[in-house]
Image 1: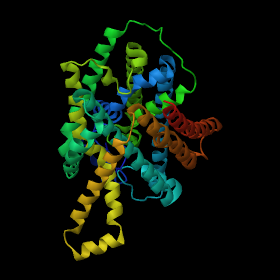
Image 2 (image 1 turned 90 degrees about the horizontal axis):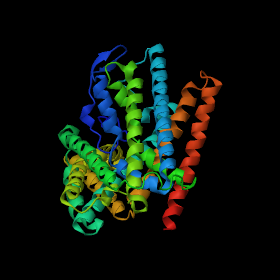
Image 3 (image 1 turned 180 degrees about the vertical axis):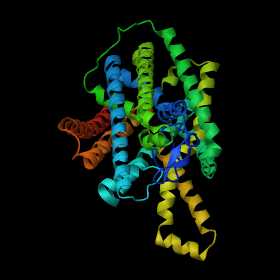
Image 4 (image 1 turned 90 degrees about the vertical axis):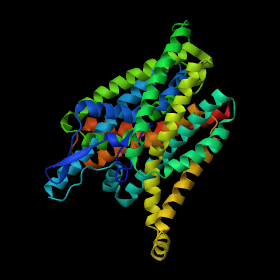
Length: 433
């Protein structure tokens, strides 16, 4: 995750802000990154891979294992390409700034691109989408924790959300330093890897139906698995910060390609193995299919503890955006002039209400899989496909060839159709259950 006091991107579940380190300066006022290719590769994986992967087997159940595999592969390729579009847009802006000899910042954020492409309204809408996507990821954390604890202790998920998570998360929200939360984020990533390994181990024990299960459940399942996959690949607004953090920025595209290839292959195998192991019994969080023994319970509780302490990192960009709006309010500024401690109290109250509101939303979410597919099909699809294509056409439309223009327009159109139909299929599919 970016150092979010400035880079308010949608950091993926379990991402770790302090891993990004920008030091030194290189020409035209730009700061030079210090991360090696190996560190950058790790940062990319940390930023993208999260608990969403645990819902992939359920998506493969809905779509079929072959349809799911194709959907994940296409989504990974499209997301990678659109990340490259963002980098091209940023490079174009830096070239123009260098030619005009204007002062350049360390690097431009996703919201900055929206502002430079479409003015203040573009930046506002871009940051609003980032805020909603980040809120969706935060709610998914709470739903995941509540449902897993419910499976271990046989109590309603809402009980854990309100009685346990809400008070603890309110206290943790008062911690403003991301570096203080970094060890918990790393612990969460380790738990994710451990959970995936144990799930695959359990899958192999039930893997006795080979590929006889449904490979294709109809085209209607493709938008569902696509929405799930978009959510799983969603570390999109990290792209510019990750590239800027690298010492040899020219190698970033190659490192990004390596990361996406590894992640995509892992997602395909994990989703396929999970579905072929449990078939129609595959649940929307694959850990809920694990047997009721001490090792499975330890994995679930470990994941929940880790995600509990990384939830504040997911909430950080939300707090930053909300606090910035509160501080710019004339009425609040007038209160601060008359009361010295008003600003601190106001910021804490805003964090209290933000955490409380998302906890309330999480208590009404009926299913983890349907919810993250919905988030992926809507705001994440707009952030991952529609906006990058629009930015690319705006900044470089006059200098690129006809083929690349056609590709951009195809991505733009398909992204809009996918967001519309994906949302419709999730809503209709849930109402028909």
